[in-house]
Image (tube, rainbow, N blue to C red; front, side, top):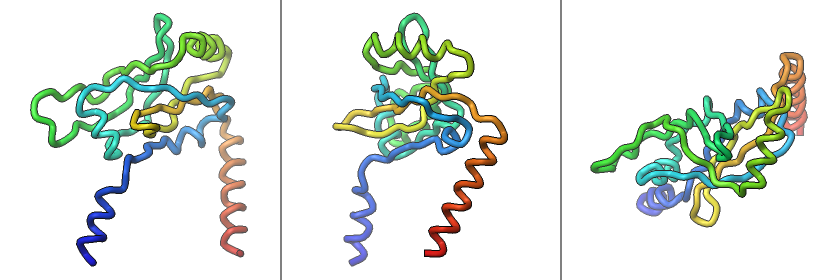
Length: 156
């Protein structure tokens, strides 16, 4: 029995990396999906869930979309080449979608926030939100709503 349990844990599939703080700090107005250009062992590190989206942000530069400050830990079994942990990485979207994002993000108070990395059909994808920052009273409202929901679920 012990061997079956340990094997089941090893083959759990790709990890989904989320930035939970993003939904607390921002109102998501629209969400988009983009591919990400990764180098070598970065794919395996993300597959194992060894990435951090906490400080990451997206920006359009020279008609291309990039993600900055995405921290991908080096894969421990890599032999030769290990890329920089926090290098900027290109995101893959259609040109029309990038122009649309650029126009909307230039509006006052809107930001491009990556909030999830996941695998779809064997390829790493980044979920990006066009988001507006929350004020402190909005954050208190969301905390209050979560507490009420938790109390209702506990009573059931």
